[in-house]
Image (cartoon, rainbow, N blue to C red; front, top):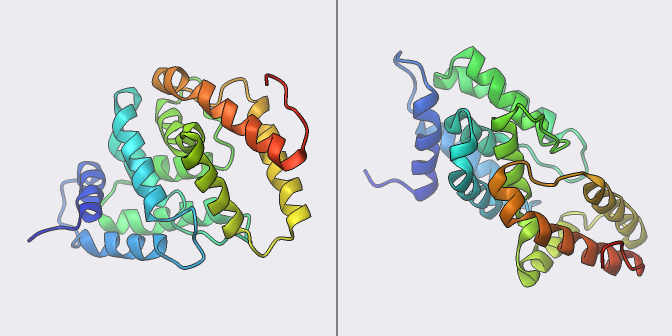
Length: 219
């Protein structure tokens, strides 16, 4: 049977995390998640974003304590996504807590996946949290895109929040950018710090300047 590339990547994440017992067919779980990531309200948090995060986990996997669990967390981290709600990460973590035991993942591994999903609320992993560092770096790597790709990302985020008036969106988005710029480090893995930190900060400052009309520190 020929698998869709994303189905194959789901198996790469799930099968190493399973215990040795007999479990249900893993592919319906992939189909459910792919359907979720394909919902029409998504403009940035789409299958393209999921694929990009999985690609970045591949780049960073040497830093992870358990790359399979990080990949599972990537699959679930925005599996529930409604732009008007602030509980997406929590609801995504709960989805993982329901689905993964049924799929054959032991309880302690399920707990780690759910913890990683919840960590994407803040993107602030501890210094002794290699799994969290890899997932957060992979999720934030879009910030270090070339200018055209970054502009497309910012436009897609705005489209997801199309129900928010322009003034309110600018204020809220500017607050997010300022918060990110105040972090001592955006990226926690050595690769992320080396390859993505400087470019991401430049992109964030440029977007903030565009939103506010004010020159940002470091420009």
